Image 1 (cartoon, rainbow over the protein chains, first blue to last red):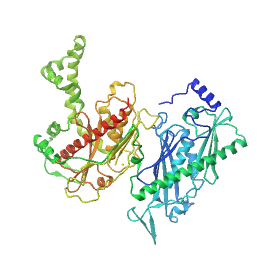
Image 2: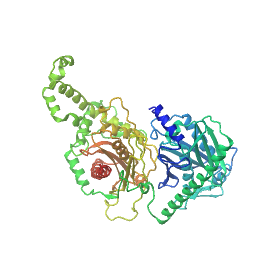
Image 3: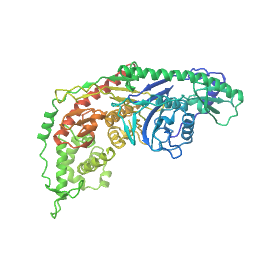
Image 4: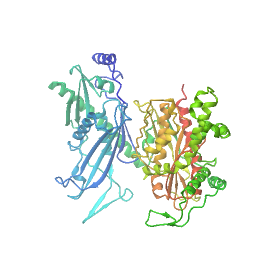
Length: 440
Length: 197
Protein backbone atom coordinates (compact mmCIF):
# COMPACT_ATOMS: atom_id res chain seq x y z
CA UNK A 1 0.00 0.00 0.00
CA UNK A 2 1.25 3.43 -0.84
CA UNK A 3 1.90 6.00 1.79
CA UNK A 4 -0.92 8.49 2.13
CA UNK A 5 0.48 11.73 0.84
CA UNK A 6 0.63 14.74 3.09
CA UNK A 7 -1.85 17.37 2.07
CA UNK A 8 -0.68 20.89 1.27
CA UNK A 9 -2.54 22.42 4.16
CA UNK A 10 -1.05 19.91 6.58
CA UNK A 11 2.37 20.72 5.22
CA UNK A 12 1.79 24.45 5.56
CA UNK A 13 0.42 24.00 9.04
CA UNK A 14 3.43 22.00 10.17
CA UNK A 15 5.87 24.48 8.71
CA UNK A 16 4.09 27.44 10.22
CA UNK A 17 4.15 25.74 13.59
CA UNK A 18 7.87 25.13 13.29
CA UNK A 19 8.42 28.76 12.39
CA UNK A 20 6.62 29.69 15.58
CA UNK A 21 8.86 27.28 17.51
CA UNK A 22 6.01 24.95 18.24
CA UNK A 23 5.81 21.23 17.78
CA UNK A 24 2.65 19.21 17.44
CA UNK A 25 3.45 16.94 20.36
CA UNK A 26 4.30 19.84 22.65
CA UNK A 27 8.03 19.27 22.71
CA UNK A 28 10.66 21.95 22.68
CA UNK A 29 13.15 22.22 19.83
CA UNK A 30 15.83 20.13 21.50
CA UNK A 31 13.62 17.60 23.27
CA UNK A 32 13.75 13.93 22.65
CA UNK A 33 10.62 11.87 22.92
CA UNK A 34 10.44 9.44 25.81
CA UNK A 35 12.79 6.53 25.52
CA UNK A 36 11.84 3.21 27.00
CA UNK A 37 14.05 0.16 26.98
CA UNK A 38 12.75 -3.30 27.79
CA UNK A 39 14.48 -6.62 27.68
CA UNK A 40 13.39 -10.09 26.69
CA UNK A 41 14.07 -13.21 28.64
CA UNK A 42 16.92 -14.21 26.38
CA UNK A 43 20.18 -12.32 26.49
CA UNK A 44 20.63 -9.92 23.62
CA UNK A 45 16.96 -9.26 23.01
CA UNK A 46 15.48 -5.83 23.62
CA UNK A 47 12.80 -3.45 22.46
CA UNK A 48 13.52 0.26 22.33
CA UNK A 49 10.67 2.72 22.15
CA UNK A 50 11.33 6.27 21.09
CA UNK A 51 7.95 7.86 21.44
CA UNK A 52 5.85 5.66 19.26
CA UNK A 53 8.73 4.41 17.16
CA UNK A 54 9.60 0.91 18.23
CA UNK A 55 12.61 -1.16 17.30
CA UNK A 56 13.28 -4.73 18.29
CA UNK A 57 16.94 -5.69 18.59
CA UNK A 58 18.16 -9.25 18.66
CA UNK A 59 21.75 -10.43 18.80
CA UNK A 60 22.90 -13.94 17.93
CA UNK A 61 26.28 -15.52 17.54
CA UNK A 62 27.85 -18.32 15.57
CA UNK A 63 31.30 -19.85 15.21
CA UNK A 64 32.61 -19.34 11.69
CA UNK A 65 35.94 -19.24 9.89
CA UNK A 66 37.33 -15.70 9.70
CA UNK A 67 37.88 -13.57 6.63
CA UNK A 68 41.13 -14.36 4.90
CA UNK A 69 42.75 -10.98 5.38
CA UNK A 70 41.63 -10.67 9.00
CA UNK A 71 42.48 -13.98 10.58
CA UNK A 72 42.27 -12.83 14.18
CA UNK A 73 39.14 -10.73 14.05
CA UNK A 74 35.57 -11.69 14.72
CA UNK A 75 32.83 -10.69 12.34
CA UNK A 76 30.10 -8.19 13.07
CA UNK A 77 26.96 -8.16 11.03
CA UNK A 78 24.14 -5.64 11.17
CA UNK A 79 20.78 -5.98 9.58
CA UNK A 80 17.88 -3.59 9.90
CA UNK A 81 14.52 -4.65 8.58
CA UNK A 82 11.53 -2.49 7.86
CA UNK A 83 8.53 -4.73 8.04
CA UNK A 84 5.08 -3.94 6.80
CA UNK A 85 3.98 -3.92 10.36
CA UNK A 86 5.83 -0.66 10.93
CA UNK A 87 4.06 1.21 8.16
CA UNK A 88 1.94 -0.06 5.30
CA UNK A 89 4.21 1.64 2.78
CA UNK A 90 7.12 -0.65 3.52
CA UNK A 91 7.17 -3.54 1.12
CA UNK A 92 8.49 -6.80 2.46
CA UNK A 93 11.56 -8.20 0.83
CA UNK A 94 12.42 -5.05 -1.05
CA UNK A 95 15.60 -3.10 -0.53
CA UNK A 96 14.29 0.42 -0.58
CA UNK A 97 16.64 3.39 -0.73
CA UNK A 98 15.74 4.27 2.81
CA UNK A 99 16.58 0.81 4.05
CA UNK A 100 19.95 0.77 2.30
CA UNK A 101 20.74 4.20 3.65
CA UNK A 102 19.82 3.24 7.19
CA UNK A 103 21.76 0.00 7.08
CA UNK A 104 24.91 1.67 5.83
CA UNK A 105 24.64 4.38 8.41
CA UNK A 106 24.25 1.81 11.15
CA UNK A 107 27.26 -0.10 9.96
CA UNK A 108 29.36 3.03 9.87
CA UNK A 109 28.12 4.04 13.26
CA UNK A 110 28.76 0.72 14.95
CA UNK A 111 31.24 -1.38 13.05
CA UNK A 112 33.55 1.27 11.67
CA UNK A 113 33.72 3.08 14.98
CA UNK A 114 35.16 -0.09 16.45
CA UNK A 115 32.87 -0.04 19.42
CA UNK A 116 33.26 -3.77 19.83
CA UNK A 117 36.57 -5.41 20.35
CA UNK A 118 36.56 -7.79 17.39
CA UNK A 119 39.87 -9.33 18.37
CA UNK A 120 38.34 -10.68 21.55
CA UNK A 121 35.93 -12.62 19.36
CA UNK A 122 38.71 -14.75 17.98
CA UNK A 123 38.76 -18.35 19.20
CA UNK A 124 41.46 -19.98 17.05
CA UNK A 125 43.37 -17.61 14.79
CA UNK A 126 42.63 -18.23 11.14
CA UNK A 127 40.17 -20.99 11.93
CA UNK A 128 37.37 -20.09 14.27
CA UNK A 129 35.99 -16.74 15.23
CA UNK A 130 32.65 -15.56 16.54
CA UNK A 131 30.25 -13.97 14.13
CA UNK A 132 27.98 -11.58 15.96
CA UNK A 133 24.77 -10.83 14.17
CA UNK A 134 22.58 -7.92 15.15
CA UNK A 135 19.05 -8.06 13.79
CA UNK A 136 16.93 -4.99 14.12
CA UNK A 137 13.26 -4.99 13.29
CA UNK A 138 11.25 -1.86 13.05
CA UNK A 139 7.91 -2.59 14.65
CA UNK A 140 6.28 0.79 14.43
CA UNK A 141 7.37 3.79 12.39
CA UNK A 142 6.82 7.18 13.86
CA UNK A 143 9.92 8.92 12.63
CA UNK A 144 13.59 8.93 13.53
CA UNK A 145 14.22 5.27 12.85
CA UNK A 146 17.98 5.66 12.91
CA UNK A 147 18.21 6.93 16.46
CA UNK A 148 15.94 4.23 17.77
CA UNK A 149 17.79 1.56 15.79
CA UNK A 150 21.22 2.68 16.98
CA UNK A 151 20.07 2.67 20.57
CA UNK A 152 18.50 -0.76 20.12
CA UNK A 153 21.68 -2.14 18.54
CA UNK A 154 23.90 -0.80 21.31
CA UNK A 155 21.57 -1.99 24.04
CA UNK A 156 21.22 -5.44 22.50
CA UNK A 157 25.00 -5.76 22.13
CA UNK A 158 25.60 -4.69 25.71
CA UNK A 159 22.96 -7.09 26.95
CA UNK A 160 24.16 -10.02 24.89
CA UNK A 161 26.16 -12.90 26.33
CA UNK A 162 27.96 -15.40 24.17
CA UNK A 163 28.63 -18.99 25.24
CA UNK A 164 31.97 -19.57 26.84
CA UNK A 165 34.55 -21.54 24.87
CA UNK A 166 37.79 -23.18 25.81
CA UNK A 167 40.60 -24.27 23.54
CA UNK A 168 42.79 -27.22 24.40
CA UNK A 169 45.22 -28.03 21.68
CA UNK A 170 43.14 -28.28 18.53
CA UNK A 171 39.96 -28.98 20.39
CA UNK A 172 37.38 -26.24 20.82
CA UNK A 173 34.78 -26.86 23.52
CA UNK A 174 31.58 -24.89 23.62
CA UNK A 175 29.88 -24.66 26.99
CA UNK A 176 26.14 -24.48 27.46
CA UNK A 177 24.79 -21.77 29.79
CA UNK A 178 24.25 -24.45 32.44
CA UNK A 179 27.87 -25.54 32.39
CA UNK A 180 29.51 -22.15 32.38
CA UNK A 181 28.12 -18.66 32.58
CA UNK A 182 27.98 -17.01 29.17
CA UNK A 183 30.37 -14.10 28.72
CA UNK A 184 29.48 -10.53 27.72
CA UNK A 185 31.08 -8.90 24.71
CA UNK A 186 33.83 -6.41 25.35
CA UNK A 187 32.51 -3.03 24.36
CA UNK A 188 34.84 -0.07 24.06
CA UNK A 189 32.26 2.68 23.77
CA UNK A 190 28.62 3.21 22.86
CA UNK A 191 28.08 5.29 19.74
CA UNK A 192 24.58 6.73 19.53
CA UNK A 193 23.00 8.49 16.60
CA UNK A 194 21.29 11.83 17.06
CA UNK A 195 19.20 13.21 14.20
CA UNK A 196 18.63 16.86 13.41
CA UNK A 197 15.97 17.91 10.98
CA UNK A 198 16.38 21.19 9.10
CA UNK A 199 13.58 23.30 7.71
CA UNK A 200 13.46 26.31 5.45
CA UNK A 201 16.96 25.76 4.07
CA UNK A 202 18.49 25.30 7.47
CA UNK A 203 16.85 28.24 9.24
CA UNK A 204 15.03 26.04 11.70
CA UNK A 205 16.32 22.98 13.44
CA UNK A 206 14.58 20.21 15.37
CA UNK A 207 16.01 17.32 17.34
CA UNK A 208 14.41 13.88 17.03
CA UNK A 209 11.89 14.61 14.26
CA UNK A 210 8.74 12.54 14.28
CA UNK A 211 7.21 11.07 11.17
CA UNK A 212 5.22 14.17 10.24
CA UNK A 213 8.17 16.46 10.72
CA UNK A 214 10.36 14.14 8.67
CA UNK A 215 7.94 14.50 5.80
CA UNK A 216 8.23 18.25 5.63
CA UNK A 217 11.92 18.61 6.44
CA UNK A 218 14.44 19.88 3.91
CA UNK A 219 17.50 18.12 5.20
CA UNK A 220 18.71 15.75 7.85
CA UNK A 221 21.96 15.67 9.75
CA UNK A 222 22.80 12.50 11.65
CA UNK A 223 25.61 12.64 14.16
CA UNK A 224 26.84 9.53 15.91
CA UNK A 225 28.70 10.26 19.07
CA UNK A 226 29.76 8.48 22.24
CA UNK A 227 29.68 9.82 25.75
CA UNK A 228 33.29 10.95 25.51
CA UNK A 229 32.03 13.42 22.91
CA UNK A 230 33.86 11.67 20.14
CA UNK A 231 32.11 11.87 16.81
CA UNK A 232 31.86 8.41 15.23
CA UNK A 233 29.90 9.22 12.10
CA UNK A 234 28.40 12.29 10.58
CA UNK A 235 26.06 12.35 7.65
CA UNK A 236 24.12 15.13 6.07
CA UNK A 237 21.42 14.30 3.58
CA UNK A 238 18.65 16.03 1.75
CA UNK A 239 20.87 18.47 -0.05
CA UNK A 240 21.03 21.42 2.27
CA UNK A 241 24.09 23.55 2.78
CA UNK A 242 25.05 23.82 6.41
CA UNK A 243 27.31 26.42 7.87
CA UNK A 244 30.22 25.47 10.08
CA UNK A 245 28.50 27.08 13.08
CA UNK A 246 25.40 25.00 12.54
CA UNK A 247 27.34 21.76 12.54
CA UNK A 248 29.24 22.78 15.66
CA UNK A 249 26.03 23.70 17.40
CA UNK A 250 24.55 20.34 16.47
CA UNK A 251 27.56 18.51 17.82
CA UNK A 252 27.18 20.33 21.12
CA UNK A 253 23.53 19.39 21.38
CA UNK A 254 24.37 15.83 20.39
CA UNK A 255 26.93 15.64 23.18
CA UNK A 256 24.30 16.47 25.77
CA UNK A 257 21.72 14.11 24.31
CA UNK A 258 24.17 11.23 24.02
CA UNK A 259 25.21 11.64 27.65
CA UNK A 260 21.57 11.45 28.71
CA UNK A 261 20.81 8.44 26.57
CA UNK A 262 23.94 6.58 27.62
CA UNK A 263 23.02 7.06 31.23
CA UNK A 264 19.55 5.76 30.55
CA UNK A 265 20.93 2.70 28.77
CA UNK A 266 23.28 1.93 31.61
CA UNK A 267 20.52 2.29 34.11
CA UNK A 268 18.27 -0.04 32.15
CA UNK A 269 21.05 -2.62 31.83
CA UNK A 270 21.85 -2.46 35.51
CA UNK A 271 18.22 -2.81 36.40
CA UNK A 272 17.81 -5.88 34.26
CA UNK A 273 21.00 -7.36 35.66
CA UNK A 274 19.80 -6.81 39.18
CA UNK A 275 16.44 -8.42 38.55
CA UNK A 276 18.05 -11.43 36.96
CA UNK A 277 20.48 -11.84 39.81
CA UNK A 278 17.75 -11.66 42.41
CA UNK A 279 15.73 -14.21 40.55
CA UNK A 280 12.84 -11.83 40.04
CA UNK A 281 10.59 -11.81 37.06
CA UNK A 282 12.01 -10.41 33.88
CA UNK A 283 11.21 -10.43 30.20
CA UNK A 284 8.71 -8.56 28.07
CA UNK A 285 5.81 -9.82 30.14
CA UNK A 286 7.05 -7.70 33.01
CA UNK A 287 7.46 -4.62 30.88
CA UNK A 288 3.80 -4.56 29.94
CA UNK A 289 2.31 -1.85 32.08
CA UNK A 290 -0.39 -3.53 34.05
CA UNK A 291 -2.34 -0.41 34.81
CA UNK A 292 -2.94 0.17 31.15
CA UNK A 293 -6.42 -0.57 30.05
CA UNK A 294 -5.27 -2.28 26.89
CA UNK A 295 -3.05 -4.70 28.75
CA UNK A 296 -4.12 -7.78 30.60
CA UNK A 297 -2.31 -10.58 32.30
CA UNK A 298 -3.36 -13.91 33.59
CA UNK A 299 -1.28 -16.16 35.75
CA UNK A 300 -0.45 -19.76 35.08
CA UNK A 301 -3.62 -21.81 35.20
CA UNK A 302 -4.09 -25.49 35.76
CA UNK A 303 -6.36 -27.30 33.36
CA UNK A 304 -8.42 -30.22 34.51
CA UNK A 305 -7.63 -33.02 32.13
CA UNK A 306 -8.79 -35.91 34.27
CA UNK A 307 -11.76 -36.68 32.06
CA UNK A 308 -9.77 -36.55 28.87
CA UNK A 309 -9.19 -40.27 28.70
CA UNK A 310 -12.85 -41.11 29.16
CA UNK A 311 -13.86 -38.58 26.59
CA UNK A 312 -11.43 -39.97 24.08
CA UNK A 313 -12.60 -43.49 24.77
CA UNK A 314 -16.18 -42.42 24.31
CA UNK A 315 -15.45 -40.88 20.96
CA UNK A 316 -13.53 -43.89 19.81
CA UNK A 317 -16.22 -46.24 21.03
CA UNK A 318 -18.86 -44.29 19.20
CA UNK A 319 -16.90 -44.21 16.02
CA UNK A 320 -17.12 -47.07 13.60
CA UNK A 321 -14.11 -49.30 13.60
CA UNK A 322 -11.69 -48.37 10.89
CA UNK A 323 -11.92 -50.50 7.83
CA UNK A 324 -9.40 -53.23 7.20
CA UNK A 325 -6.23 -51.88 5.81
CA UNK A 326 -4.16 -53.99 3.50
CA UNK A 327 -1.75 -55.74 5.78
CA UNK A 328 1.85 -56.53 5.14
CA UNK A 329 3.21 -53.48 3.40
CA UNK A 330 6.43 -54.21 1.55
CA UNK A 331 9.28 -52.06 2.67
CA UNK A 332 11.95 -51.54 0.05
CA UNK A 333 13.98 -48.82 1.66
CA UNK A 334 13.34 -46.82 4.79
CA UNK A 335 10.76 -44.16 4.14
CA UNK A 336 8.94 -46.01 1.34
CA UNK A 337 6.30 -48.70 1.42
CA UNK A 338 4.42 -50.74 -1.09
CA UNK A 339 1.03 -52.20 -0.34
CA UNK A 340 0.55 -55.67 -1.85
CA UNK A 341 2.20 -56.92 -4.98
CA UNK A 342 0.49 -58.35 -8.02
CA UNK A 343 -2.94 -57.82 -6.50
CA UNK A 344 -5.79 -56.17 -8.32
CA UNK A 345 -6.10 -52.44 -8.02
CA UNK A 346 -8.14 -51.59 -4.98
CA UNK A 347 -7.86 -47.83 -4.97
CA UNK A 348 -11.60 -47.33 -5.23
CA UNK A 349 -12.13 -49.25 -2.03
CA UNK A 350 -9.46 -47.31 -0.30
CA UNK A 351 -11.13 -44.04 -1.08
CA UNK A 352 -14.37 -45.30 0.37
CA UNK A 353 -12.71 -46.27 3.56
CA UNK A 354 -11.16 -42.85 3.77
CA UNK A 355 -14.57 -41.30 3.59
CA UNK A 356 -15.73 -43.42 6.46
CA UNK A 357 -12.77 -42.40 8.50
CA UNK A 358 -13.69 -38.85 7.92
CA UNK A 359 -17.19 -39.39 9.22
CA UNK A 360 -15.94 -41.07 12.33
CA UNK A 361 -13.63 -38.21 13.07
CA UNK A 362 -16.57 -35.88 12.77
CA UNK A 363 -18.51 -37.53 15.57
CA UNK A 364 -20.00 -34.50 17.22
CA UNK A 365 -17.34 -34.08 19.88
CA UNK A 366 -14.65 -32.89 17.70
CA UNK A 367 -13.58 -32.63 14.18
CA UNK A 368 -16.37 -31.50 11.86
CA UNK A 369 -14.80 -28.97 9.62
CA UNK A 370 -16.73 -25.76 9.98
CA UNK A 371 -18.12 -24.05 6.97
CA UNK A 372 -20.10 -26.79 5.31
CA UNK A 373 -22.43 -27.46 8.17
CA UNK A 374 -22.40 -24.00 9.60
CA UNK A 375 -23.44 -21.69 6.83
CA UNK A 376 -26.50 -23.28 5.47
CA UNK A 377 -27.39 -25.58 8.29
CA UNK A 378 -29.06 -28.92 8.25
CA UNK A 379 -32.44 -27.69 7.14
CA UNK A 380 -31.41 -26.79 3.70
CA UNK A 381 -29.57 -29.96 3.07
CA UNK A 382 -32.63 -31.91 4.14
CA UNK A 383 -34.77 -30.13 1.66
CA UNK A 384 -32.07 -30.76 -0.80
CA UNK A 385 -32.12 -34.46 -0.24
CA UNK A 386 -35.86 -34.63 -0.79
CA UNK A 387 -36.02 -33.19 -4.20
CA UNK A 388 -32.42 -33.35 -5.04
CA UNK A 389 -32.63 -35.59 -8.07
CA UNK A 390 -35.02 -33.24 -9.85
CA UNK A 391 -33.14 -30.14 -9.00
CA UNK A 392 -29.88 -31.48 -10.11
CA UNK A 393 -31.20 -32.57 -13.45
CA UNK A 394 -32.65 -29.15 -14.15
CA UNK A 395 -30.53 -26.86 -16.15
CA UNK A 396 -29.45 -23.76 -14.36
CA UNK A 397 -30.83 -21.43 -16.94
CA UNK A 398 -34.36 -22.58 -16.38
CA UNK A 399 -34.00 -21.91 -12.68
CA UNK A 400 -32.86 -18.44 -13.32
CA UNK A 401 -36.00 -17.62 -15.25
CA UNK A 402 -38.44 -18.75 -12.59
CA UNK A 403 -38.70 -15.84 -10.22
CA UNK A 404 -39.23 -17.56 -6.92
CA UNK A 405 -36.86 -15.93 -4.57
CA UNK A 406 -37.39 -18.48 -1.83
CA UNK A 407 -36.80 -21.60 -3.71
CA UNK A 408 -34.10 -20.81 -6.16
CA UNK A 409 -31.25 -19.81 -4.03
CA UNK A 410 -31.82 -22.79 -1.85
CA UNK A 411 -31.71 -25.13 -4.74
CA UNK A 412 -28.54 -23.69 -6.03
CA UNK A 413 -27.01 -23.79 -2.64
CA UNK A 414 -27.99 -27.37 -2.10
CA UNK A 415 -26.20 -28.20 -5.22
CA UNK A 416 -23.02 -26.61 -4.12
CA UNK A 417 -23.31 -28.15 -0.72
CA UNK A 418 -23.71 -31.63 -1.98
CA UNK A 419 -20.79 -31.09 -4.26
CA UNK A 420 -18.73 -29.81 -1.39
CA UNK A 421 -19.62 -32.65 0.82
CA UNK A 422 -18.47 -35.12 -1.71
CA UNK A 423 -15.29 -33.30 -2.27
CA UNK A 424 -14.38 -32.54 1.26
CA UNK A 425 -13.29 -35.97 2.39
CA UNK A 426 -11.03 -36.60 -0.54
CA UNK A 427 -9.54 -33.17 -0.12
CA UNK A 428 -8.54 -33.57 3.43
CA UNK A 429 -5.60 -35.89 3.13
CA UNK A 430 -4.07 -33.56 0.60
CA UNK A 431 -4.51 -30.65 2.92
CA UNK A 432 -2.83 -32.46 5.71
CA UNK A 433 0.21 -33.12 3.65
CA UNK A 434 0.39 -29.49 2.74
CA UNK A 435 0.20 -28.45 6.31
CA UNK A 436 3.02 -30.62 7.36
CA UNK A 437 5.50 -29.18 4.97
CA UNK A 438 6.12 -25.81 6.59
CA UNK A 439 6.40 -27.46 9.97
CA UNK A 440 9.34 -29.55 8.84
CA UNK B 1 -4.54 -4.90 9.63
CA UNK B 2 -1.34 -5.82 11.19
CA UNK B 3 -0.43 -7.56 14.33
CA UNK B 4 2.70 -7.92 16.25
CA UNK B 5 3.29 -11.04 18.05
CA UNK B 6 5.69 -11.24 20.80
CA UNK B 7 6.24 -13.80 23.34
CA UNK B 8 8.86 -14.58 25.77
CA UNK B 9 9.87 -17.48 27.81
CA UNK B 10 8.99 -18.24 31.31
CA UNK B 11 9.74 -21.52 32.85
CA UNK B 12 7.26 -21.93 35.64
CA UNK B 13 8.92 -24.01 38.33
CA UNK B 14 8.39 -27.34 36.75
CA UNK B 15 11.57 -28.89 37.92
CA UNK B 16 10.00 -30.60 40.96
CA UNK B 17 9.05 -34.22 40.64
CA UNK B 18 5.35 -34.77 40.32
CA UNK B 19 3.55 -37.70 41.78
CA UNK B 20 0.60 -37.74 39.48
CA UNK B 21 1.60 -38.31 35.93
CA UNK B 22 -1.02 -35.89 34.69
CA UNK B 23 -0.46 -32.96 36.95
CA UNK B 24 2.89 -32.06 35.56
CA UNK B 25 2.14 -30.82 32.14
CA UNK B 26 -1.49 -29.99 32.37
CA UNK B 27 -1.52 -26.32 32.91
CA UNK B 28 -1.19 -23.32 30.74
CA UNK B 29 1.63 -20.94 31.41
CA UNK B 30 0.87 -17.35 32.22
CA UNK B 31 -0.66 -15.15 29.60
CA UNK B 32 -0.20 -11.51 28.95
CA UNK B 33 -1.33 -9.39 26.13
CA UNK B 34 -1.39 -5.80 25.15
CA UNK B 35 -3.53 -4.42 22.43
CA UNK B 36 -3.26 -1.33 20.33
CA UNK B 37 0.36 -0.80 21.20
CA UNK B 38 1.39 0.38 17.75
CA UNK B 39 0.13 3.55 16.18
CA UNK B 40 0.57 2.89 12.49
CA UNK B 41 -1.29 -0.38 11.96
CA UNK B 42 -5.04 -0.54 12.38
CA UNK B 43 -4.80 -3.13 15.03
CA UNK B 44 -2.00 -4.61 17.01
CA UNK B 45 -1.55 -6.93 19.87
CA UNK B 46 1.37 -8.42 21.61
CA UNK B 47 0.76 -11.76 23.13
CA UNK B 48 2.99 -13.48 25.57
CA UNK B 49 2.60 -17.04 26.43
CA UNK B 50 5.21 -18.30 28.69
CA UNK B 51 7.76 -17.29 24.75
CA UNK B 52 10.90 -16.30 18.21
CA UNK B 53 11.82 -16.82 14.36
CA UNK B 54 9.68 -17.01 11.23
CA UNK B 55 6.88 -19.46 11.19
CA UNK B 56 4.03 -21.36 9.85
CA UNK B 57 2.36 -18.72 7.75
CA UNK B 58 0.23 -21.09 5.83
CA UNK B 59 -1.42 -22.67 8.82
CA UNK B 60 -2.16 -19.35 10.39
CA UNK B 61 -3.47 -17.96 7.15
CA UNK B 62 -5.87 -20.85 6.69
CA UNK B 63 -7.12 -20.54 10.21
CA UNK B 64 -7.72 -16.83 9.84
CA UNK B 65 -9.47 -17.28 6.51
CA UNK B 66 -11.84 -19.73 8.11
CA UNK B 67 -13.12 -17.23 10.63
CA UNK B 68 -12.74 -13.82 9.02
CA UNK B 69 -15.88 -12.75 7.22
CA UNK B 70 -14.06 -11.81 4.07
CA UNK B 71 -17.22 -11.38 2.05
CA UNK B 72 -17.99 -8.24 4.01
CA UNK B 73 -14.87 -6.63 2.66
CA UNK B 74 -14.66 -6.93 -1.08
CA UNK B 75 -11.48 -5.54 -2.63
CA UNK B 76 -9.74 -5.41 0.69
CA UNK B 77 -6.55 -7.04 1.67
CA UNK B 78 -6.00 -7.93 5.25
CA UNK B 79 -2.37 -8.29 6.15
CA UNK B 80 -1.40 -9.94 9.37
CA UNK B 81 2.21 -9.44 10.27
CA UNK B 82 3.53 -11.59 13.05
CA UNK B 83 6.88 -10.79 14.52
CA UNK B 84 8.22 -13.49 16.72
CA UNK B 85 10.38 -12.16 19.47
CA UNK B 86 11.44 -15.29 21.19
CA UNK B 87 10.45 -18.91 21.23
CA UNK B 88 9.95 -20.75 24.45
CA UNK B 89 7.78 -23.48 23.02
CA UNK B 90 4.24 -23.66 21.67
CA UNK B 91 5.19 -21.03 19.14
CA UNK B 92 2.45 -21.76 16.63
CA UNK B 93 -0.23 -21.64 19.29
CA UNK B 94 1.10 -18.32 20.49
CA UNK B 95 1.15 -17.00 16.92
CA UNK B 96 -2.47 -17.97 16.48
CA UNK B 97 -3.48 -16.29 19.69
CA UNK B 98 -1.60 -13.13 18.74
CA UNK B 99 -3.17 -13.12 15.27
CA UNK B 100 -6.63 -13.43 16.76
CA UNK B 101 -6.06 -10.62 19.24
CA UNK B 102 -4.66 -8.38 16.51
CA UNK B 103 -7.68 -9.10 14.31
CA UNK B 104 -9.96 -8.26 17.18
CA UNK B 105 -8.07 -5.07 17.86
CA UNK B 106 -8.36 -4.06 14.23
CA UNK B 107 -12.09 -4.63 14.40
CA UNK B 108 -12.24 -7.19 11.64
CA UNK B 109 -15.61 -8.95 11.68
CA UNK B 110 -15.18 -12.61 12.41
CA UNK B 111 -17.47 -15.59 12.58
CA UNK B 112 -15.81 -16.71 15.76
CA UNK B 113 -12.67 -16.10 17.68
CA UNK B 114 -10.01 -18.74 17.56
CA UNK B 115 -7.17 -19.89 19.72
CA UNK B 116 -4.23 -22.19 19.39
CA UNK B 117 -3.34 -24.89 21.87
CA UNK B 118 -0.27 -27.10 21.73
CA UNK B 119 -0.11 -30.53 23.35
CA UNK B 120 2.94 -32.67 23.69
CA UNK B 121 3.12 -36.38 24.40
CA UNK B 122 6.32 -37.59 25.95
CA UNK B 123 7.81 -41.06 25.65
CA UNK B 124 5.65 -42.60 28.35
CA UNK B 125 2.46 -41.13 27.00
CA UNK B 126 2.08 -38.27 29.44
CA UNK B 127 0.08 -35.45 28.05
CA UNK B 128 1.43 -31.94 28.45
CA UNK B 129 -0.35 -28.78 27.55
CA UNK B 130 1.48 -25.67 26.43
CA UNK B 131 4.92 -27.33 26.40
CA UNK B 132 8.10 -25.32 26.80
CA UNK B 133 10.75 -25.49 24.09
CA UNK B 134 12.61 -28.15 26.02
CA UNK B 135 9.53 -30.28 26.56
CA UNK B 136 8.69 -29.91 22.89
CA UNK B 137 12.12 -31.15 21.91
CA UNK B 138 11.96 -34.17 24.13
CA UNK B 139 8.39 -35.03 23.24
CA UNK B 140 7.45 -38.04 21.17
CA UNK B 141 4.68 -36.12 19.47
CA UNK B 142 3.64 -32.48 19.35
CA UNK B 143 0.12 -31.59 18.31
CA UNK B 144 -1.20 -28.12 17.72
CA UNK B 145 -4.88 -27.36 17.31
CA UNK B 146 -6.81 -24.26 16.47
CA UNK B 147 -10.28 -24.16 17.96
CA UNK B 148 -13.11 -21.75 17.44
CA UNK B 149 -14.86 -20.02 20.29
CA UNK B 150 -18.46 -20.72 19.37
CA UNK B 151 -18.61 -24.47 19.23
CA UNK B 152 -15.10 -25.34 20.33
CA UNK B 153 -14.62 -27.13 17.05
CA UNK B 154 -11.42 -27.79 15.25
CA UNK B 155 -10.28 -25.22 12.71
CA UNK B 156 -6.80 -26.46 12.09
CA UNK B 157 -4.56 -29.20 13.31
CA UNK B 158 -0.94 -29.95 12.73
CA UNK B 159 1.02 -32.75 14.26
CA UNK B 160 4.55 -33.99 14.41
CA UNK B 161 5.62 -37.37 15.65
CA UNK B 162 3.95 -40.67 16.47
CA UNK B 163 0.72 -41.04 18.38
CA UNK B 164 -2.28 -43.35 18.44
CA UNK B 165 -5.81 -42.36 17.55
CA UNK B 166 -6.77 -42.61 21.21
CA UNK B 167 -4.03 -40.17 22.07
CA UNK B 168 -5.15 -37.82 19.34
CA UNK B 169 -8.63 -37.72 20.80
CA UNK B 170 -7.22 -37.23 24.28
CA UNK B 171 -5.11 -34.32 23.13
CA UNK B 172 -8.06 -32.82 21.35
CA UNK B 173 -10.23 -33.11 24.43
CA UNK B 174 -7.48 -31.55 26.53
CA UNK B 175 -7.07 -28.77 23.99
CA UNK B 176 -10.77 -28.09 24.15
CA UNK B 177 -10.58 -27.83 27.91
CA UNK B 178 -7.62 -25.48 27.61
CA UNK B 179 -9.31 -23.39 24.94
CA UNK B 180 -12.01 -22.48 27.43
CA UNK B 181 -9.34 -20.90 29.50
CA UNK B 182 -7.83 -18.99 26.60
CA UNK B 183 -11.22 -17.70 25.54
CA UNK B 184 -11.90 -16.60 29.06
CA UNK B 185 -8.63 -14.72 28.91
CA UNK B 186 -9.73 -13.07 25.64
CA UNK B 187 -13.04 -12.12 27.12
CA UNK B 188 -11.58 -10.66 30.26
CA UNK B 189 -8.92 -8.68 28.47
CA UNK B 190 -11.49 -7.25 26.10
CA UNK B 191 -13.85 -6.51 28.93
CA UNK B 192 -11.08 -4.62 30.61
CA UNK B 193 -10.25 -2.77 27.45
CA UNK B 194 -13.78 -1.62 26.84
CA UNK B 195 -14.67 -1.12 30.50
CA UNK B 196 -14.60 2.64 30.09
CA UNK B 197 -17.02 3.78 27.55
